[in-house]
Amino acid sequence: MTTKTQNPASNIGLFIGALLLPFAAGAIGSLATNSEITTWYASLAKPAFNPPNWVFGPVWSALYLLQGIAFYMIIKQPHRLRGRATKLFIAQLVANTLWSLIFFGAHAPAWALADITILWSLIVATIYIFWSIKPVAAALLVPYLAWVTFATALTIGIIARNY
Image (cartoon, rainbow, N blue to C red):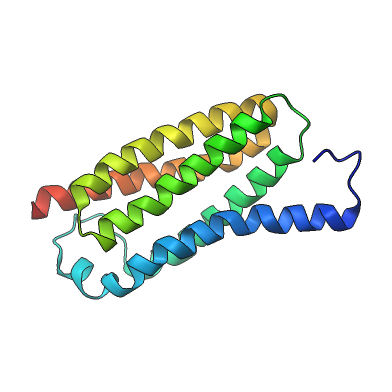
């Protein structure tokens, strides 16, 4: 996976794969989300800082794009921590996907709060290890951490108002 042995075509394939991975995780999560936005989620009391539903799609799309670019930067590096960084990146994607399935699919905000707490920790760990490999890749994940921090507050607000 080093740049020394790859031709431009394989770099493009690797880039596309790195971009598709977070978008695939998002697509799986959206299977549970889309049908619940106008039904179950609409019936919940939400905090005043809850954004309009249309905000979530563009924000998540931008965050998945940044994640994919960051991941590509990492998997291109011949670094001893690349394998560990890849595992952390995938682990946080799994936790991200699970949040949607738990919150929207299972209608279980309290369990989703437990998951998002783990997700937040995994993002911090991913940023930390990415920083050791390529600081700009870590910086690309900071908006994601900020949004998940906001989503955590939103989840807490929903739990407080409904359960």
